[in-house]
Image (tube, rainbow, N blue to C red; front, side, top):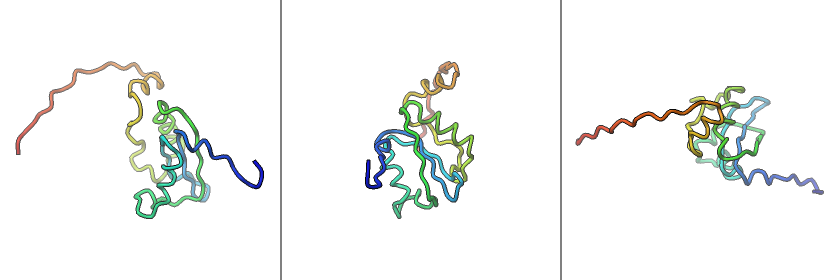
Length: 118
């Protein structure tokens, strides 16, 4: 497109994004919709707004592979604001993620929850 416009259509889909500050990757996250998630990093009252960044990188990918790609990138870049290393998998079937990683899944017998009245 002319007139200095840039196509950001990829941000309408799911993907993994990296926030960069002065050339250093400071945060890596995953999203089902890039526009709204990356936008949340700029809202004043958001917990995520405290992460300084001056550049955003976005890698479009299928929802089923978000966790795997995010984990690989966190391991590669070790961003300072990914405190817990990797965010827990909340997207898709965890057994699919294990298969993508080449790990055989053997279901365990679930333990009965212990309930107690207070």
